[in-house]
Image (cartoon, rainbow, N blue to C red; front, side):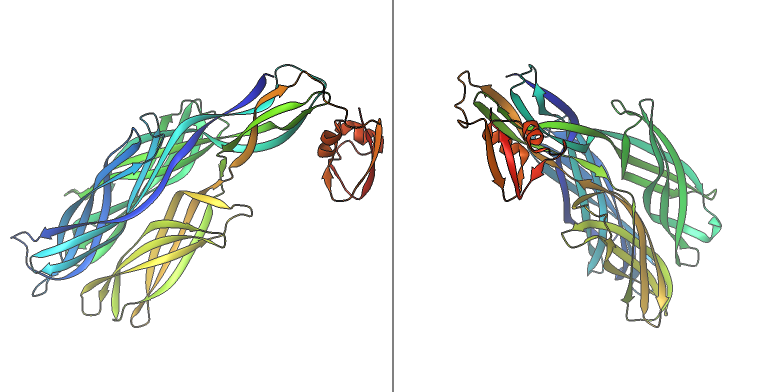
Length: 496
């Protein structure tokens, strides 16, 4: 018999990789710089130069811009070295091609350097690289038959699923001049970092409208050789073509900073250039009526089925998270110069879910020397009931620190994160049905049977066994029309 199909168009996630690895390079101190006595602090920011899906693989390359602050031999003000560290990564998987949608987010979660001799050092950047590849797909499920046969009994199951119906990748650039208050106090700025924060997103007339801001964090060296953090905000509104996305669909947005530059000008402004990639995911909800079982009242049938996995998922409400930890440093502190935190990974198992953050505190001791300390901090998440498998789709975090006692720092992290909850639908799909021409032998020589149901059984299974109908059993036993199961009951079973 010819089958009818319900079609679900979606974007299937074929690669979801989160890799952590280190890149190291050696650097020579320029001749015009003094010798190195001690490393005070190290910063790093990743710049993605190329990423493209190819046949069976994704090639990602870029550079980490590392900034090393060191104490020169003989003392004096901190000196700064800028060191580029190249990186490249290949992700392989079946199904990757040029038509796939690719999203890459690369973060420097830790930066370090050690002195090899007074004129040479080794710098290491620990990268957290997220790579996701989406491929367009259509899943078809049997929901009925083209021709009618009143002797054919169907059991259908209803499933309400939400799927990523479309995924788009877009890129944009922010160019802005930001005022630097009291700019005469600052000799230089460096180590820029940025976090893109979304305040509103919507689909309108085939376009995606995004509003938010870029929260910039920089480190400044003052004219009296002290370090100070400088924060500023660049608002943005971006409008993208969103072909294939409907206004009533739910939209999920994920950002990745691809490059960032910030330059102090003599007029007291900071020239900011930021390039970003945005992943737009639209979600659509479907109600599916799938044929779960079938039999014929008069003829034997041969059924062929196939397993189907529908990658259903939906966005969860934004979750808040926070963590606090006391970090001993072993010396008296006079100033907290800078605090940063970067997302390392999402940890999720059956018992708990948390975000592992890598934090760095740069502080000044009581004798005027600068030092840094690193900590891995876990921020627990309270998931809604029923959320078994989750994926991170966005994160905002603020880090701060206060001096505690003689030799400790209280590190505080607070943030908000967006998650996707995976709830894939696994079912058996009817792929072919053949009805034999020869009639099946009678199930019983009598027209009605009496049967005691001890353990709970489905009325469908009983009707199928005796080649009758569920409605016939309900009517013979005066059962409610919505009754599906029964147990501990004597049943009259009409036999055709």
